[in-house]
Length: 390
Image (cartoon, rainbow, N blue to C red; front, side, top):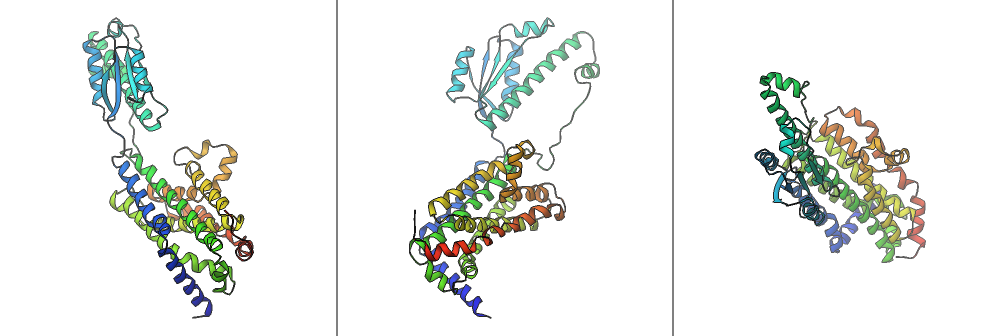
């Protein structure tokens, strides 16, 4: 074994001692990821929110409208907790956050329906709460369609139509819905598989930046580089080696919880996702080193990493479709590792496509190491010549 290998091992041992001597490392590298994994997977353990509080304003108060309300309350996502006397009372309750939605049935609705006229019922949802508002909207819209169809069917029966004839009039084209790869519409399948790796990516960048700049703060940077004969490449490999091992273990724990404990879809087996996680970890390490070489300031480097990490969540496309982004953001999305992680996850875990379909995203994830390589000389100069600044 050559001298360079022993130097890297010596630096790695030194880094392990530094990590073990500081509680901040233990918190950021172990406790924070584990708490995030447990929090988000248990928070959305049911897949979809259930029993969302809703209200009703039934000014008609007939057997027909009471049946509509009972049917609405029977939906899994809706829980009618209050009957309000008028529209203003229900609106005030929704503004106060007591309910996410309410269903409004004006007086005379049943009579208008029986006489063949077109009554109007209304429902209101709190769109400021995205998921609860969307689910409440879906249930109330569906209930309105059912109620409308029920009245129409009763009218057709009264005219002598058979059930088949009535259904042919009410629903001339029968529609079926099949949710591909996530038939239970489990929100956690989409959210947890991107949020948890995104949190891990953010922590990796911040720890890398801190571990490098703390050498400048404590004036040990020259000693660190001297152990590698002032070779910045060997110095970085030795410093990052213990972090790579730790972050890899955290990544494996994340995948175990997602696919071993919660049994999320994994149509191509675990190996593509192991590759995906390893690529994300290394791309995050590369970005952390890149930010260190970009600015000689701990505050600015951490701010850049935090901004990049936070922007990764919306720009990855898991919550808002990438095709609907402005052209500038579409191009910018290629610079975020989480975007490529998400695309590989969709291709491999959800759609079960052959691995070669993801070759471009894999190549780009590997290419992130070109960013710090361009700034290694600049980073070495920072470590040797700059004094610590905030």
